[in-house]
Image (cartoon, rainbow, N blue to C red; front, side, top):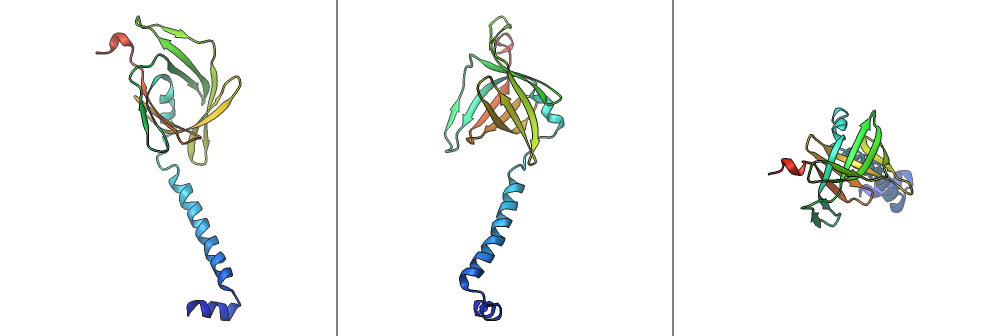
Length: 161
């Protein structure tokens, strides 16, 4: 009955009404996705906490599978200054020293679409990771394939219990 009123008064067909309503719902859905996508954005002040030595703790895949890392041969050394810096794989030693690799990837923190991203550029590739959260002892990054990486601050072997 309501559709007959709209169709009779404005000469709309059912298909045209359907498309009209779907366009409105599409824009509302798009707006909601945009609002929800970065609800847990870290503060600008917390971004400096990315500096330091990080070891991977676990990886969560989009299908829900998890991979835990008990021992790490290599850790990430991240150095940022004014949102620009380097990321380098290093090997911690039992005496507290580090063996550093020759390659340092360039990194940059970008504030885009209400989220912070860690853009990494290596010699032959570049990628982007969304910064989900960062604190004094935890860093959570999500790559473009929706794989989430959980890092914890590295504690030297000599200081572990």
